[in-house]
Length: 304
Image (cartoon, rainbow, N blue to C red):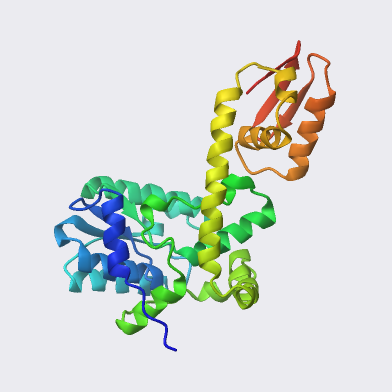
């Protein structure tokens, strides 16, 4: 039986309505890959051209990256869509070879925000999808993430966050959309690619509707994270009485320490800090946890 194509236009319209973006200017981040080219195609069908712009940053880390730039620029020209393009070495000449992937992501975000301000865009949209979410959740699980890390990514800028990549590819194929495949996507030495090519096919054999399951699980994790966050906000005074902390449920204690750390920390680090707070009464004692230093002083926990 042929799978019915998902209606991406309706999904996109519903997203704009939900996020109060109807009639507002939006900026699309378009890399030239299939996901973002589908986003561009759908947005062009729905959004008035005067309210639509595209930003593409050529990192110039791949030999043929200029072809992505040229493709996106040409499509925008053909469709009369405002195009903003930057080349990495032009704006970060001295640093181009030194910046890692996380730094690149931050720089790209900063560049996009500047372009959005110039264009007057209310929102910057990306083409992240449900398969991206699955990969992200699995990757974070391998590092230790807590409920926060297993929650959905920022969904108010991602119209297709509940849509599997296979549906985007189906749309691109049916509509004869041109895109460029990043050859580094096949490099399984990159953890995300290893998950994509080696882990997901096995999981999909067990659970064919993998994306649907992970989307629902991420929303449940978000509910739990928000619940604990509210509890921590209500209960965690600075200073916090040690006896009050010790009266909390173990789950709240662990979430409090994870949340307090300000960055991803291992379960062992949390357990070590928990053991210290449960068994140490001596004033003047202190313990580093993530980006914080907790200090015990006269039955109080300070440094929160």
